[in-house]
Image (cartoon, rainbow, N blue to C red; front, side):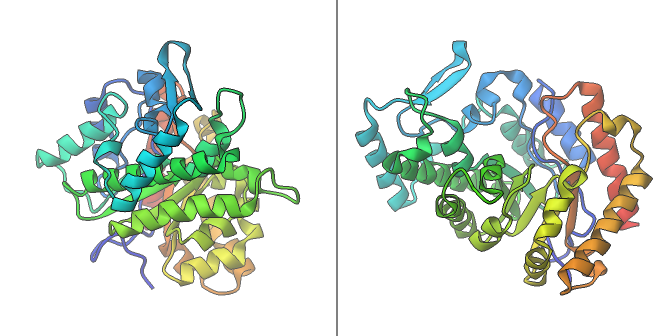
Length: 351
């Protein structure tokens, strides 16, 4: 079995980034990504450029009733015009009209720089990786004016989910202007609230939020990934139809082993996973590529033994190598060390 990016390029051992980088020059960041990750580049999210490129603000344009106060580095949902704003989003969603839901260059300079660099003809990646903040994470993190999670307001939360689905469609269509093959990852760190015996939010709420975005992504002919950098119930993204499961393999592989049968069944159905085996902490300074590659191979073995459905080779063939999380908030020297480690580990595992 070969898990593929396209008709000729298999995923096994390939490398990419989670998304964010600590640069401020979008064209330099795009060049770094394309030079270091030529097969599967991810457009660089540049949090160092300012609040508008942060995880939530970056995808906040055109969300219903959202107020962004850049000078205060804050954003929230305002109830003043919520009903008409929700109706606006719902009408656009029913028509699949995403034109009013673009991410502008002011909010995602790296996205436009990467597309421009590829359009100029110097690079021909097998696929492009995009990112969008997940609706569940948005709903449990961004509050209303009374500091209550927006996910607690069903009418508003439905509109947030739909608005982000339209943003996902818009992003895929943009990326497809320069690459036939697109993989869009949903960033859902908020799924950590679903782990354990007493989850903080209803499981059905998270499943619906994730599934709506997955369906929107698939409707555009793109693959869908989901990244969560902590412990969660991984059955949720699997049930939602996510193609590529992305996790922090360096710190939380024990959580993956809890769901080994489900993971292996996912791979058996031609699913893939992105193993964040490269630490995104100062541990990267002391780690060697050989050591991390050895840990990754051991993880293949443990998944095969615990999952009891497929072989180590099939698991390895379905794996993309990534850092454990985004690099946007790290010192530049550390981020560049992690980029090099990611490339070196990928080479060893493909070798």
